[in-house]
Image (cartoon, rainbow, N blue to C red; front, side, top):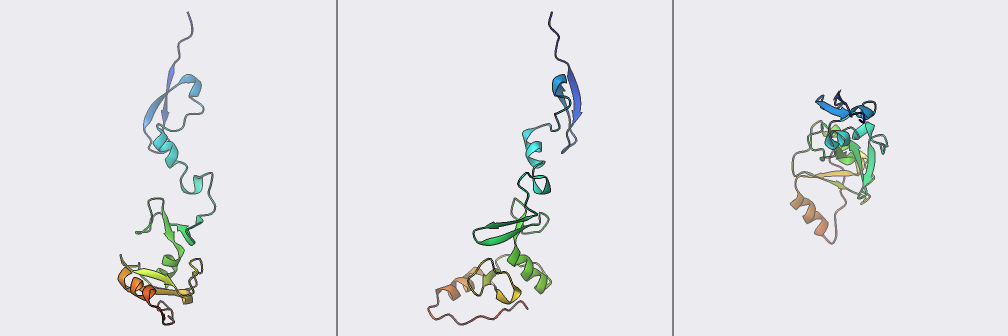
Length: 138
């Protein structure tokens, strides 16, 4: 009669849940589920990690998973972080950061202008003869 597969207890590295694996997988199994496996690949553990900076839609994003306005992936726009640093507070919901020179990857403080809401920003963008803005976060 053939040898039966035996099962071994393992502890998940993410959620610490005890799970069973077959004896032949005891040295390789580390996670109880695909969900825990994918959690293990986030942030610095990701195979695609580039130091916590990435560019999306012309804006630099910084990995700050504990920031109150971070995306579900844990990123915040660098321009928002710089404005918050100079304002000594988090941006309020609805506040809009505008890049004065139109270059959304130029996050120098002197190039950032804070609009109180999206309507004010849209009103400015709709003007034909736009007044030259000076940074209001310095």
